[in-house]
Image (cartoon, rainbow, N blue to C red; front, side):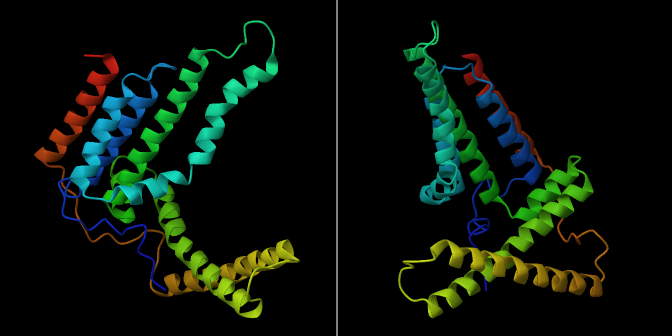
Length: 248
């Protein structure tokens, strides 16, 4: 089976796609750190932050719906974290813990910071192939073992998803329609089958890798070059986000 959804838009011909992975990693990481450093409850700079993020989306030519689908996965956790403070104050009831407009502004700032950071991360991972991002991290000092572990996890996700699709197809063929009784038992059995088959396939894949000369590192076929446009992009992103942060 072929799964192209993680790298679906990595081959687009846009100005952001042509940048060196290190420039994108440092630029987007700096932008995230600047955004999350905003004082709590301060929501006035966020329209400018999201305007810049929207500019990145337009330059990348990646559909907005694709980025939003990636962000929606974490949206329930963001909302739960944002509502935790007002809810805890409301349940406390002690003097000085009343829910005020400042409290709701603090919660809103949490939501905006998380959404901005998630959008930038989703955009970063959609602008380049995963192995190039890992190579860029390796080039700036990421330990080799973490790079290998991340690359292996990324590859084994597809094996796990293949087994999930196979077991789901087998379950549907044996129990057509909606499960009315024993739903948890059936789903639990399916999860156990997925785990056992993935464990077996992982051993087979590893033995095949050893037979082909795998020595703990993956071969690299592409060279990276940090050019003037990469430095210009990195400096521009940092300066513009800092200007918004400092209110210049």
